[in-house]
Image (cartoon, rainbow, N blue to C red; front, side, top):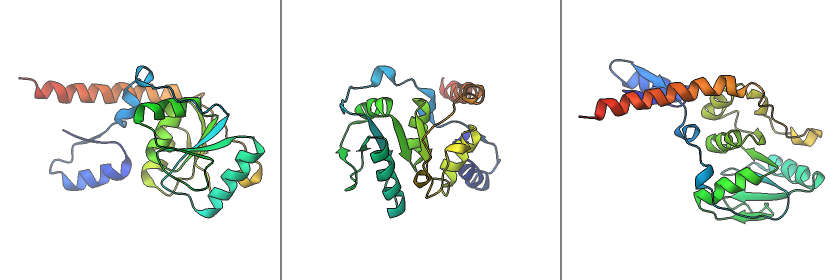
Amino acid sequence: MISVRDIESLEVAKEASMDKDVSMVLDPTFLHNFTSNEEKYNINKPYILVYTYGFEKNIVKEVKCYARRHKLVIVSAGFYHSWADKNIACNPFEFLSIVRNAESVVTDTFHGSIFAIKYRKNFISYGGHKPKVKYLLESLGLEKSLVEVGYLSNDKTIETSYSDLEAVLNPKIYESRNYLEQCNAMMLP
């Protein structure tokens, strides 16, 4: 049994597999409730979490302006960015708390988007040029969170509507768990 978590990987896996039987499942991050794993990490001020390997200069400029307008500290967790107000070298369990307590999230990554969604944070993603990120958000009906450079410069706010998410996400969680259970059952003697 072969499974993938995005449309781009699906095409690659189908091409590489002999039987072309490849299933699409959710990233495992969606399948676990991390609440009991969280380790408290206090920032003590309202903040915007940035989760990126690196933004281009125009995005940095608009994130900084947005943070100033909304009186938010810019926090980068896991990555050092000289332009962030606070860079945190946190462990994965502290990261969960940092996401939970953020006022909003700005990312361009697959997992940055997933954690923003898991914690139902207001977020935007500059990752529309990345097939995995684009597919993830479109498949969950959150394509309005995909933004272009300049979005925050136009006095826009970071707001995410999750009103239709459960109807889309819950069946995907159910199907993904069933798939994994089938895989596990095949491995048992």
